Length: 270
Image 1 (cartoon, one colour):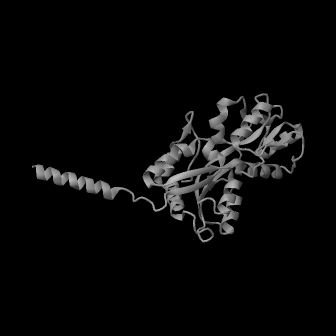
Image 2 (image 1 turned 60 degrees about the horizontal axis):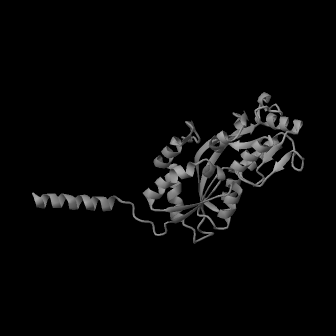
């Protein structure tokens, strides 16, 4: 009987050993990403599970989409998680990345003071909302940092046929999303925000959502593995592991489950 129990225990130990994921040769993984994935709390909620299951240790640099792609171009990141499709396509076309995958999406919104001096609540579209801002010279806080949100904002001004740069009411701050939201609140102005960061920040401000729902405000996120042919020292195995995980059942389930105040922050493509 004792011999049988010992045999069973040995088999269980061996099964446990062989079922574990082998430790990666290089566990250090550098992720450059937009500020929204960090400031919304998403990465803090999901990355510990990836690290535990894979053996990789992820170092996150949250600097905005434009700066994240620049880090990838210089080989200072192994993988990037960003949200400006035109910039992502250019990154891929220049062979800085070897694999881009859709991860999730949400939307952009325009937030501003409850009194709404620019009358955005009466606008009929995102472009019309920006026309209202221009016409009324309402204070607008622009990130001005080449982030995905900044790129979208500039696209909306262009679509409206307007150029606010240099005007007194148009304030470029060169900072992240949460900082832009807080500054807009402090000066009684407006800003374009991603919904996830807004959900994380809204209880700290008096701002309200005043324009949303336009198809032009669609906000997709993609993950890109940096090309090891350009930068041989990048951790391509780790980058692929994170990309597989975030677009696979486990990562997608955790992304869907992440909520702030009961509200879902990100949605899946499939």
